[in-house]
Image 1: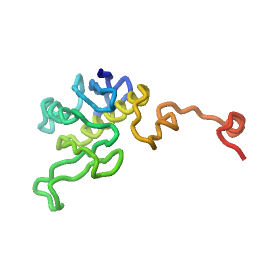
Image 2 (image 1 turned 90 degrees about the vertical axis):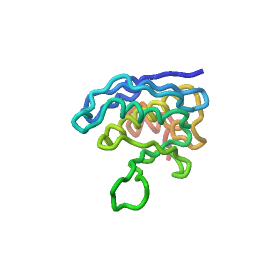
Image 3 (image 1 turned 180 degrees about the vertical axis):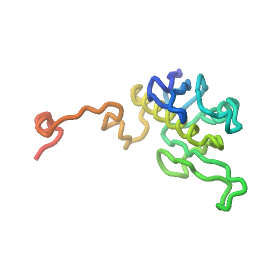
Length: 164
């Protein structure tokens, strides 16, 4: 069974253009991303020599990613003085060696990062709602990461959240 969500519905993610983008994401009950599909965006990619096909190919890399291990967004280095074949733009969740490397879209790195954030954050939010255990020390099991409810000191003391 696969649950499908639309990124803006769960994350309200905005693109580089500061306007919403819409990506459909399917996760299974074991906590794996099964499919990701671009529905709509207004990112300014044409002026950078990029096409929608570049984003579609980028998003195809998100198939079968385990939400427990996370991803590292990388960019291929061409003609750079930096050693190595690629460089990590942003790493999420867990030990670096366990991360799945996703190749970002060059010249649209901000859009790539924002898409990644909406996909992973939304998928983890849905996984928690479905009771999928992401990790034994997953903060989502202890703190509601999606809802913030300010309370004063006396309310926290009264409900037992804190004690002296």
